[in-house]
Image (cartoon, rainbow, N blue to C red; front, top):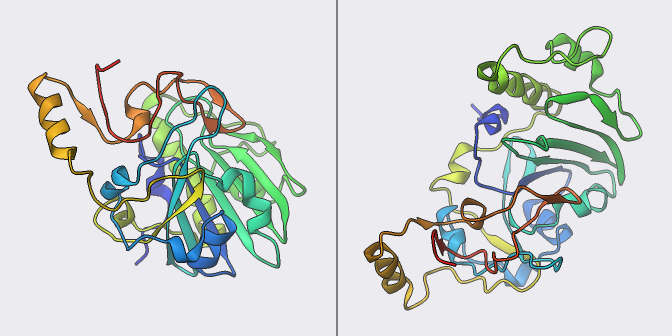
Length: 264
């Protein structure tokens, strides 16, 4: 049984986005996102992404982006890290009779977002929790399902969750609509011990697949100072600002490698 995608409603999913494509292979999806086949890494786990040496966005300059790719339930998928390209290239990915979906997770505002493109055209999109505001050439594509799941009222207005405790269940209903309509699934193991090849898709990440020689010494130094070591930069000093649908780094966030919290 597949894992579906409703579980993506859980708070603090530690990725920048997920791209799904039907009609092309995982390798072709990586290429359409900007990767080069001969430069793929050996298969790595989610935890090993920290070694890839990505630089974050700084003073308006794009940072590095990486994806890990695989296939499940008839779709190729790409899990995005850093300053990736899924949001920018969705219509290009969907060219040539390909279906493509981009999901941008978020636990606060602005909301998580869904976009669906087909045959090179953005067909439908909306924010999770703001489904009454839709866009694309067929903005009402999923309207009947959203009403049936009580995400929207029969008149198309928003059916807001009764309390904060119900918010995740509300998101799960909305993601359930996408899961059933498109047959989407992302294995939970992708964020655990599953090994998948990684591709650089923006900038010039180092694409190491293991720690630098002084990695353990640096971690020991941080521990001796009582500092908490964070794997991903969004855990350490990310601003709440957004730009063009991408997370905005703070001016002091120079790298998307491990950053000891408390170090300026």
